[in-house]
Length: 446
Image (cartoon, rainbow, N blue to C red):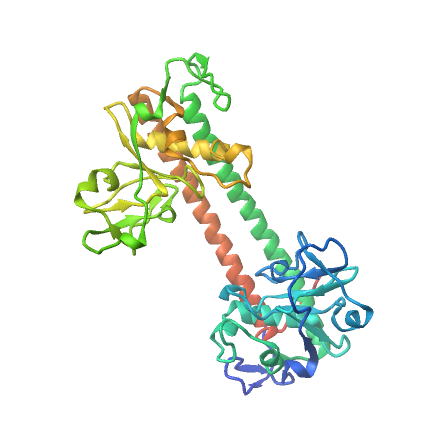
């Protein structure tokens, strides 16, 4: 690990996945150093609005951070409280989850008040004199990141239950070294996390810049000197005086895809088809597509061809991409609109950028409520009046936006690569510290 030195002498741990450990360290089962117990069982009463605060699986993030933006309540008598109330320094271990990436996530509990946890979270309580729970939190989360809990034959059906956790062999350094390792990792991981947060903020700013560039170009054009006029559309405002506003149905043939009916699939006319999920922003997945029956007499209505603009009807309503690279027969499902140019005055990519602007502006959000399921019906879509510059100007705007958004995409890719490297370094630092590959006892911590 670069500037960090290892210990002087090592020995075989006797555990295959651990390898060598510092000579004076031990290996033991979790049950030797921690009391492990289940939480509150039974059905959770979601109607309760008061009582003992109740933590559940969503309160523990994949990174092992405890969040309390939303939590439940339960009723416990004094005897029950003695058994299941959490204490500061406890760990909460997720032993059962439908998503394999969450199995083994472990959070450090440090909250005031009366708190308990659901039975899908195991509580680990350590003797504070003999063991440092922060050290074991780093160890368990390190195991989760490496995939240990999923590849271990002890875990069954995405579970790692109380008995399996009790018998898990872990490294046990002397207590003072556990504290030194935890203190070192608290400091270093915060530094790394702060760097990651700053880079993620840069990505967010680049996304904002991209949206602002597109929004301005498709509504105001590239020439700041042209006279403007009121569009008559509240969310659009002013547009260049020489631009037109024409109903979308007069500019494009709009067709909703074919409804999938499993009962009517005969297998006689199987055609690969696109689903809503296959249409992402400026990208269409054409790999491993499902099939449905589309009769040849339906081809004109339910097939796509290069140059068509596909627009999502639901999900992220308005999400769009242009069909490219299709060589053969390809259909589309009823969760997608196909827009095909009428006449010679349209450039579909300009409309693609317009849809990006509309989605980011929230024009398609149902009744202005982002929590309402939105469906962009054919009837609604046909009646939108959207700005249309002359064709030559559409092309100039598209060329400008393609160039600018490509630059932003490259900048984002470099920043994302740096973030991934920082995450890898963070993981390696934790793994090497808790397994004794580096000696951090003398590392100065401000």
